[in-house]
Image (tube, rainbow, N blue to C red):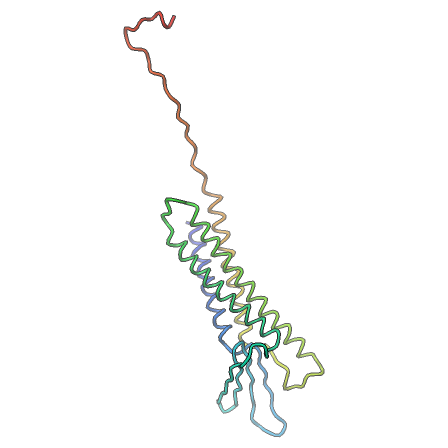
Length: 217
């Protein structure tokens, strides 16, 4: 029962982390810049995401522009886009394997198939979390390096967006869920002893009553 509870907890954390990956992937707020012009009073907030960039005015108007070419993006955004997409696919694989393992309650042909499926699901969740963590940390490191670069203008410097925080939280949930799933399967595999092997031997028949006893002298 304890391993079943851990598996349910790992699945919940994995699905929650995957939803966080989707939010971080779609939300155009990986880089955020807010500045006030010298001769104007209107405040502009620039959002830069993996797929588009948006400019939000103080009046509430927002204009978004989808990137025309992937090769025209900075190196960190290119890597973040690729790693995030792979993390989403890894999360889908983890959810599929977890559902398949949950349905495999009566695997009479191979009783060890359910722990193997759940172990694969935990590995998929953990891999997706690690990939997303690399993408978010790479982007954050680039933002910090550019922010302290004296050659860049003030309007070109960026700060952390909400997508980075969603990415950090989602990666932690994915890794934690994958570890819990894997540990629950390993503990269940070690705790279930193998059925003892019973050996049968032939029993000699007793002599019939009245049989000649000279054969047993």
